[in-house]
Image (tube, rainbow, N blue to C red; front, side, top):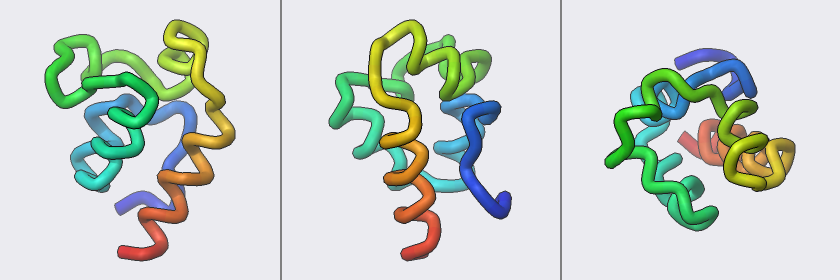
Length: 68
């Protein structure tokens, strides 16, 4: 697992190392596990395209990662 979840990671990369991230994505209306673009789209790109708060998502994902 990487040290931190970063904005440069794709949705698929995050899901590969942190499967529980799916719930954080779905809470924002993102169904990344079903989306073919998830392997190409970074979290930063997703925030711009889908209008969610990137810093808030990163904080939540990194907190989940710390919990194990």
